Length: 173
Image 1 (cartoon, rainbow, N blue to C red):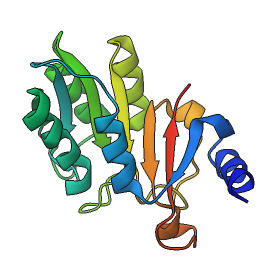
Image 2 (cartoon, helix red, strand yellow; image 1 turned 45 degrees about the horizontal axis):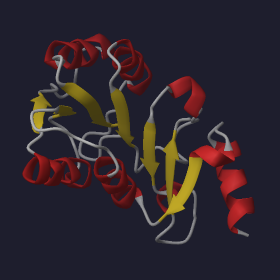
Image 3 (cartoon, rainbow, N blue to C red; image 1 turned 180 degrees about the vertical axis):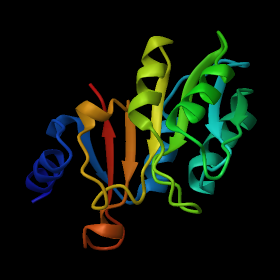
Image 4 (cartoon, one colour; image 1 turned 90 degrees about the vertical axis):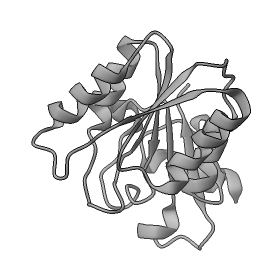
């Protein structure tokens, strides 16, 4: 059944089955993303000020282990526009920025972050975009190829009625 479920999940988010892994939850997906990358001391990860601890702490572990630098972008609540968020991330990018990590669906405010626009910005700078979307799957009509995120972690049990402990990790080819 695993391959059938993976194929159906991929179809649900407009992805290829080989871009989708079934894991335990969004937290595990974010941890896999952070721990699966090679970092050099001084490499930077840009995060928003609205991150869930599960989207923040995997990067702080990499900071402790490998000496990366975390750059926190302040996001006003509520933001005035999508461009306000995108411009704040753009201003934080340096030649050492390797990753932008953002909560797609912010757990404390309900904000839907402009992941598509942030993905476009990241691609312009050869930066990976990692999206924590614990609540996105089942709440939003998701199309991974349109959204553009390189990595997308979600929890189908939150809004899709899947059993607890079922996570989805999308990694763009």
